[in-house]
Amino acid sequence: MNRNLNPKLLVLIGVVFVSFGSILTKLSTAPSLIIAFYRIGFTSLILTPWILFKNKKELKSISKRTLLICLLSGIFLAFHFALWLESLKYTSVTSSTVLVSTHPIFIVLGSIFILKEKVSKKEVISIMIALVGSMIISFGDSSLGNNIIYGDFLAVAGGLCMAGYMMIGRIARKELSVNAYTFIVYVSCTITLLILSLCTSTRLYPYPKTDWLIFLALAIVCTLLGHSVFNWALAYVNPTFVSTSILGEPVFATIWAILIFSEIPTFPQVFGGIVILLGIYLFNKSQKIDKPEPLEV
Image (cartoon, rainbow, N blue to C red; front, side):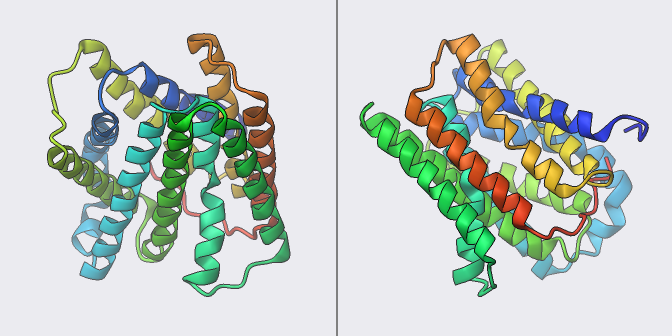
């Protein structure tokens, strides 16, 4: 990408691209597993030539331990997508996108109880705020029916898997470049989603042309032009700006849902969502983040 471009502006554009993920998913007639499989599968195929050109030597020299860690990370990412995309069939775009963003809560809990790391008071307070927001949404959605609550549960479970993916990724990233790590994880994620589809007798094809266009759009627009922009921008802007900007995804997704599906969020969803995003924002602000290596694509 051209370094003369405004990184902060591109991050905001990336947020808009990513926010279409939930909308495109709801527009597809395909099962959630298939949507996730083709989204990551197409992304992996598109990245393969460039990654092999740039990182072939590194990929060949990866230790078995690091490879296994990457594969495990990809499995968590696969379940994140499978659970989150499935949640969109039951609950609102607002509840789904906000609740799946609660992964910092699980990262903190994992840091305390699994990694035995010390957590600051500011981090604990911010996570408690996010938890209160989650309870507000759940309490409000409970009056809308069991299906809504089930969808909320799936979204939170998707956030839990995202936390696992990120925590495991921290280990692998000490030994790998972002390029190599991302590629292996995406391939592992694709294979896992394929296995899940086969085990659940979910057909891989045929699907309408519109679904194939949606799969490609999810891969190109949401993943490559969305998430890859975030990784690129980390070389030029504060990581806190990137992580905080990503909180705009539920906001934009809610706007698109109102315009496209006439899906008006309830007061508890809006208020609870604001509380959650505030908690996550404060969590991001409280962290001392070293500038990560950018994705070299």
